[in-house]
Image 1: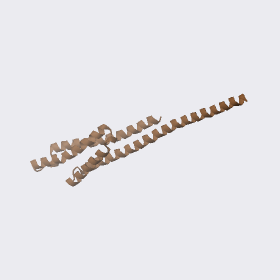
Image 2: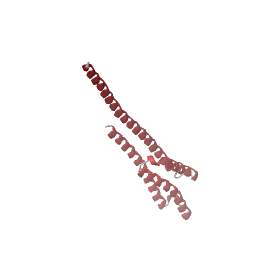
Image 3: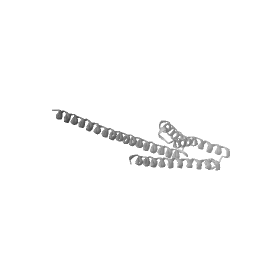
Image 4: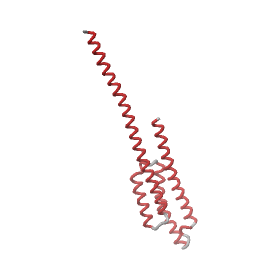
Length: 162
């Protein structure tokens, strides 16, 4: 009889330990799965935000030499987008986007100033051309920064899963 009791205790202990081990394995596996899902969701959202940033910057570039209504529409859309999504951007990209909005507002005003002063040059004035080159450099920096950040995010993910 005492052998049966001891065997019963070992059986119950074995079941308990087996259940505990199974629970621990599932817990850590589920925790890893949650991290993977979270990381993928964040990565997907960031890709979407980067694509939106690129589209807004390209629209600003397109609108630069258009009439005032199109320019105001472009800068308004970029400003609203930036206000809504800037926390998803890396600090440098956030700053670059803010600067491009500022430069976008200044550039046509500068061209108009030179056009009013000299009555001929406007967009072709040397200072306006220099500002345009800075503007183009800022566009390029944002575009390259977005592409670089996407590649960094992918690299981080592959380091994370390995």
